[in-house]
Every structure is written in C-alpha cells, then in structure tokens.
Length: 95
Image 1: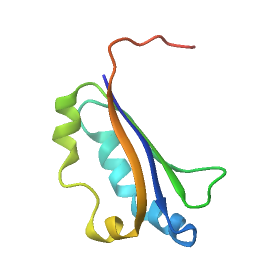
Image 2: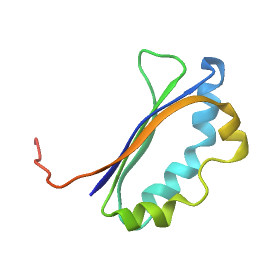
Image 3: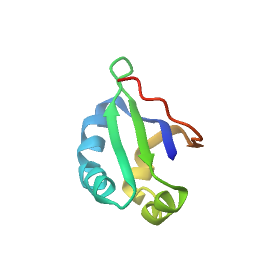
Image 4: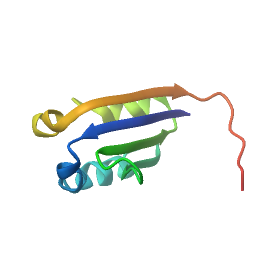
C-alpha cells in the first residue's frame, strides 16, 4: 500500500474556490484503479491550509493516476506545500 499525505497552503480567501476546482480531480481519483481513499479537505484551524490524504493499493496505481499534477492555475495558487509518499509494509485496523 502507498499513502500520499501532506498539505498545501493557499491564500485563505481562495481556499474554498481552490477546493471547488478540485472536485473533479477527487472524483477521478476515487474512480481510478487501485485507489482506496482520495481526499482534499479544509484544515479546521488554518484558513489557508488544505490537507491531502490518498491511499493506493500499489505504487504502479499511483503512477498511473498521477499524470502531470495540478493544472497551471491550481499550481499558481499554491503558496507552499509539503506532500510525501509512504510505502506501507503492514496495516493494523483500529476498528
């Protein structure tokens, strides 16, 4: 399993419109082969922060979906980012 997690920072005044522009990407991600979870959400405390969480069955599935990344317009709106991929060797369900 591969987990992609982190955050983006955008202008707080633009966060809601940025997220609205990402709806199609989230829908595509969730339909992609090997996608277990795909979400972009507004941080509850930081008005400019967007939390990213993706879970994939394999690295090949992530690479097949990735493509070229955010559109030029979305990329221009990102002030900073910290996102990483994690290879997971074992999973322990908590429920």
